[in-house]
Length: 220
Image 1: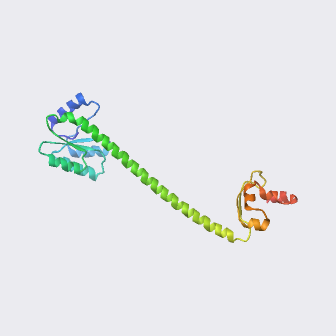
Image 2: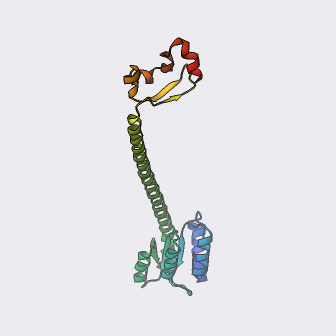
Image 3: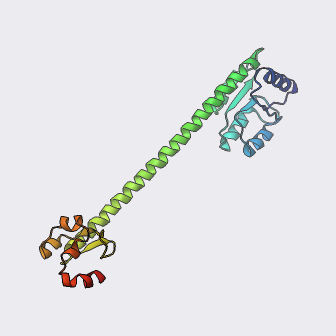
């Protein structure tokens, strides 16, 4: 609560103690002090009188915007300051309260509403950031996938041009569950067995080796 008139401070603290005890007000007497505190700690809201000795609430709003402070502001104005109050809204204030006889009774509701709006806006900003990050990640994944497919296509072209067999196998040659993940198309022309036979049957290549050569083939 940024206010320099002690009488207004006392009235406000008394009203909040009686009617809105769930709020905790920290009183500062100058906008400069308020800016220092806002950069050092987190506050749910700033309640500031429009006319202060060092700077007006409008100047305080400009400084807060320059410092990228996300805390919501409510400006308290006197009667006849409505134009300044509208200017405060344009500078980012969430609300303004005119000092009429019953203005203190409206403050708690105005504060609750401003805090709720601020939290909703912050949640929306976080969501927008998360969505932007997700879109960037999806774009990067798509780029990497396309790049990988391009590499694979070039590799397939190279393998197809090799006049022999190219294969990829997982596991030891003598393991019963050894699995072949890839074999080039030349295998059917050269050995007479389809690619599907090689890929679907564990250790298929060893099963077609001559019995007298199996032990040596497994070792090698």
